[in-house]
Amino acid sequence: MIWVAWRQQRTQLLISVLLVGLVSALLAFFRFDALEYLRSHGIEGCLRIEKERCTSSAMNAFASEYRTYVSVVPMLLLCLPVLLGMFAGAPLFAREFEQGTHIFALSQGVRRGRWWATKLVVAGVPVIGAVAALGLAATWGLRPLNFVTHGRMMTPGFETQGLVVAAYAALAFALGATVGLLARNTVIAMAATLALYVVFVAGVGAGARPMYLDPVEKRGSVTAGAAIGSGRGGSVVPDDAWRVGDSYFDASGVEVTFDPSSCQSADSNIETCLERQGIATVSARFHPDENFWKFQLAESGIVLVIGFLLLGLGGWGLHKRLL
Amino acid sequence: MTTTDTALEAVDLGRRYRRGWALQNCSFALPAGRIAGLVGPNGAGKSTLMSMSTGLLRPTTGTVRVLGQESRGGTHRRLAFLAQDKPLYRKFTVDEMLRAGRALNPSWDDQHARRLVREAGVQFDAQVGTLSGGQRTRVALAVAFGRRPALLMLDEPLADLDPLAREEVMQTVLSEVRQTGMTALISSHVLADMEGPCNYLLLLASGRVHLAGDVPTLLAEHRVLTGPRHVGGHGVPAAAIVESRADGDREVLLVRGGGGEPPIGWHQSAPTLEALAMAYLRSSSPSRVPRRSEVAA
Image (cartoon, each protein chain N blue to C red):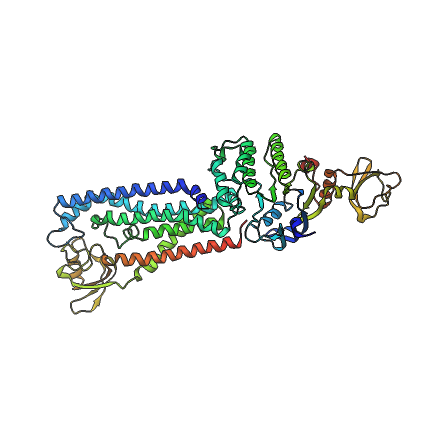
């Protein structure tokens, strides 16, 4: 059965691996290109604007150099995993039902449970493995460009790096395989996979992701440049952190509201606007870059559990009804 | 009769879909070694019966036993089934298709399957999707016979073939069946295909078994009476009349049982298998009288 499943998936698996290889090569090229830029401009190892060496002018020049690349690559990394997962999963059973070949396979000496599991493993594991390598390649390749990508905690940095890339591919695969098994139609399976995928991924991102860990809270005075968007380089929130909330206090320490829309063009910077509204201290809650891998593990775990539940649903459906 | 003498046995077998019963109260016992024709119009329940026999479709009621064993979840090891559209992996070459047969079957006679492909004149490196209907059927049969079955079930094997290919396919099947002594159940909505080779008839219509038995016995049990067309003239009890129909100014009756002398003024003859089957099919469906061309052509 393994040979039969492999023969059926062979072409598609090779194309998937080839695509992942191409994108990985692109990521590697730009990693070395960016490292070379940083070295030649004297800002080697700068991940964000920091006092002294990693100046805002040098970092902004670096950002404008790589802006095009950084705006294109996340699209590629967002689409490729779900597409590879979908194209591996949706036709896996649906096409067999469409062409009637499931009757051939199952009227031979192979039990339906084994047919189902073997096909899932042979089609799924290599694709998900390749996408996992892509996720790690993206983490590695985009690291020097951390400042340009606004880090890897916020969308789309979080979704396009690390372990979740493979987890999302696994989710798309499980969705495709299960819908294909139940609907028995490749086109329906693909459409439903895309729709449900967006719902699941957006749901997990908005509903669960902020709660993986408690956010870090930091306070600072406006005059010291603590405000977000300050040009003074002392913001309480690092550029690559994910800000989830902030509060404002007046000189006596009472919490007040800040109305950004009342900032005037006469305000030369954020500080004058804050001070005009009587704000002396700002406080922000955020998830720092250090928690990246913990967040990745938590989200991957959730997504994989959803994927396994979906596969289980498909297995149950197969048990209930076959022809 | 012991179970080993029965190749396929159904007891009160039934299957209901959302739209209604596809097969109901189906009971018969096909003795081993027969070549059985499973005959009936489209939608009679032929494919449903075969699917349940392979264990791929669960019966709603009753049981079906293949070579004495109830099919549950999988196909009996000695049953080979060829579905209506002869499903094969289109992207595979013929050689790979045989390899798939070997990989999917614990007992597989590769030499035999290859010999059948060679006899069919099909290239081993040809892609299955590029084969003609006849070649494709021959490859599908080679894969089926590679299992070395004791019971062969073919669902409409000739439906999409030209006359020459029909003859070749039928000859392949029959020579294999005769050489090995296997039991065959071949479905068709075309009676003429079945008349020559079959020595057992299973007639389904509207999801019910209307006739099941050895062909010589069935023929001996029935007679055709032809006589003048006026009510009550023949004196045959209504329960014995399978079908009565007008043919010009004469009346033609198919009668079950009886024998002896025909009523005065009536001519008596033995039915052909086709006439017998047609009479049962027509009488089974009062709302829809199948045309001769549709059922028998």
